Image 1 (cartoon, rainbow, N blue to C red):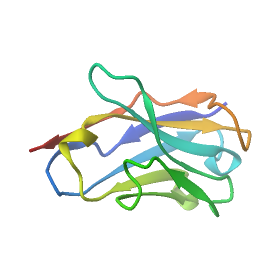
Image 2: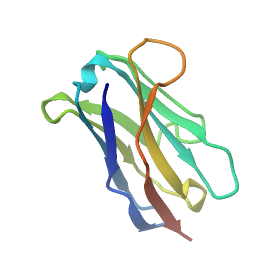
Image 3: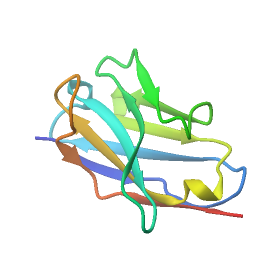
Image 4: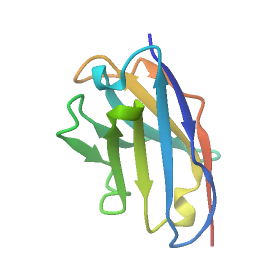
Length: 119
């Protein structure tokens, strides 16, 4: 079983950049398909990005495509989400998630990190 802890959230101005990270413990994250999700106040949790176990493929929600990049840093057992061109609509709690399977739902979740984008 893997444990996930997110970090790197904070307050940033519109148009700014932020990188959130997810550190794994208990198992190596390259054994898992990893994903980032977010939940804004009053809204349901939504998919943001995912990366395959080998790191060769990734996918993004249309709302973040071209602005966000998901990447693995296996030496640190970490997955990052680089966020550029941030907009107030990106304000949310960001969660990382892991699945031991190449498709389907995610089994393990972190507690989240808050990202706030000011107008």
